[in-house]
Length: 171
Image (cartoon, rainbow, N blue to C red; front, side):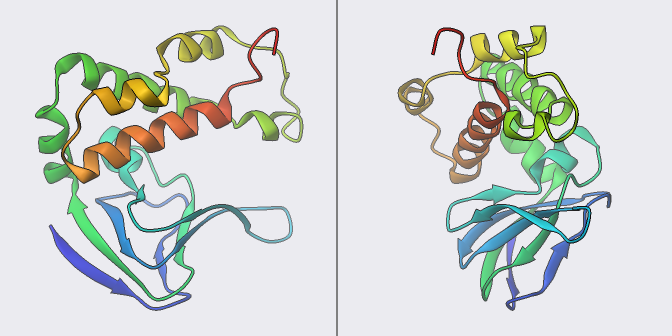
């Protein structure tokens, strides 16, 4: 692990690229952008403590979005081997949960974007399964994750999953 500084406007990585590093924001802000019809769309603004770029190195897929420094930013950089070692030091049940949530996030469009993508708003079997797996925030805290990168990974996956789920039935 080491630190890297990105001046405002610097591209950290581009959507569609292969990934070999993940990043934990130490100071500053990272903007996550997706390709839009006319211009990129900001889908997230990440501050200190936020992890990004991890999914591409954990599952071997490509970058799902572009990351750009929204202001002068310092990130802790970890390569795939380091992140995998940290992940494998966790309880196997927690690793299975993280892997399942990651697969759901990779294969599902956020709920608020489904209509724009011409997709059904009905809850799918994958949505139901993810809803059953998704731990409430107080349960995530009970996991006792000491490693800030693993804690950020778990919180980020839970947040990504929540954004992809349709409203709970009866809500």
